[in-house]
Amino acid sequence: EIPTDACMRLLREGAVGLLALIGSDAPDVRPVNFALHRRHIVMRTGRGRIFDGACHEEAASFVISESDRLEHTGWSVVVTGRLSICDPSDSAILSRVRPWARADKREWILLSIESVTGRRISIGAGH
Image (cartoon, rainbow, N blue to C red; front, side, top):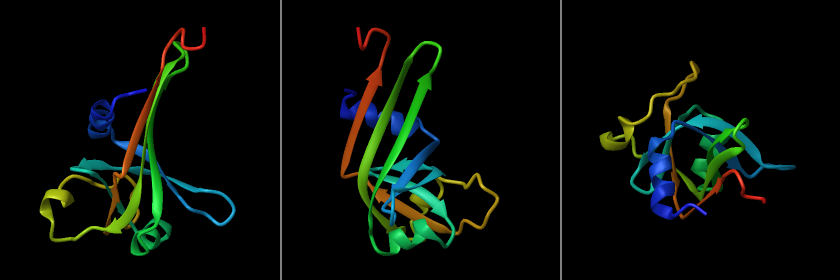
């Protein structure tokens, strides 16, 4: 397991993750670029599934990971929390994320960090 403070450091250093929302038949997973601000994951999005989830303050999960397939090592950090709309007047948050996609991403979304866990895989982990 990765300690919570190390998980938060990995989140602070991260750039792209996967946001998982509740779907009708299976989880709805979307890649997003993000920034960490206090105890929130900050994202930009357009009007659509992520924005709708934030309007309804849905529960969601977020994952960042890194792996080396040649060395058989890696790590992952999983956050669970609730989506919400970000106050557009909060310049401390808004300055942190620029969308990578060229689509219209005018909405600012937060995912609260209610739980954060991490795991590291290293050589010899199964031996």
